Length: 496
Image (tube, rainbow, N blue to C red; front, side):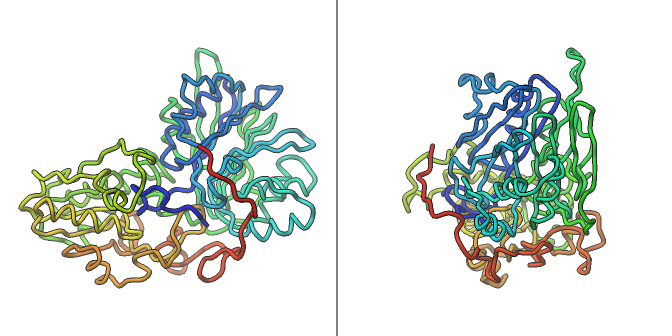
């Protein structure tokens, strides 16, 4: 469970993605490709980034708090020092463990078979219980991230690298995608329910006569380096990439697939192809379904940028109401632009968004957004529309109400802070100040994804944040979602 939700006063009303992972094998430019891939995946984690590569003799690593473009800026010369034909990388947004240097991934450990680097996307829901057991058996933890639990589990069993990894993963619960790098192999694994994404790709380099294979959280990481997607890694699949090519195995019992539906609503970049679906087209389809379910008499459809744009386009196409950019986003507001006093927190939305009065004044406006978490941003956006002269403001949300916290790798407030968990729909509307407030229905969401509706006996997606139907055990959490104990007694000052 996240411990630092809302540290950015200008973006404290969204769910934040878990992390991004990238791995590549078979090119002398492994670190450069990894840095580019992580740059494309920056939206999945903005807190810290790291790369570990192997050059045939030793591992080279750099991990640091900050954005990819700043940490691996060419003028700093860091990437040029990361030599190797294989590499893995990670962008972090903390879901377990505080935002400290010791928690930045990839993590690295020395085993009897050699070094191993691990990068993890997701959350292990029994990591705390496993950690207690491991500590009692003599393990000494250096971080507070659940990823380190995997490394200690591997150290307590015998066998090859792959055998140790499989044995460790058979003991964990949760949602995860992993990339691991040893001296001879790049390994990728996806949890048996496939909650978190992972894709396999390849890069032909004709001038060098080589083909590199890679793993990433999303296909947009392939596009930036000119690689092509081969396929999605299947739920419960373990892929090994080495000098002989790509090898696959399914070492875990088969389970019903429950891919995170919020990847389509918000997390993934709209230009990615996820589980065979264009994210952009999926969001447009959600907007169309929303317009069919809740038609509104209005003059303009206005997206709340940027995540609301594709759904707003779909809503406008289905309803026949013109689409307009009625809110202009300032993309250059940094995390530490100004000291976040109470007065400045109140102005945060205006620093990031501004009403386009020429589009809004004298008109009935349909606002389209992806979700409502706390509701603070929604209220300020509606106030902004009123101040710009909107005669009516109708808010349409391209997801069902967010009523439950996520424990599978998404940074979520406690349930008591979720607006939809503590208010009725009408109370939400009054608090936000809009004329009408509508959410796509659960069945409507599934229809937008090409299904007849939600099969309550066997849902096709993980939708626990909307339904409270958690498909994976929450061993470390009580019924309120609180972790029973902290991970570490050491309090550090944040670096950077």
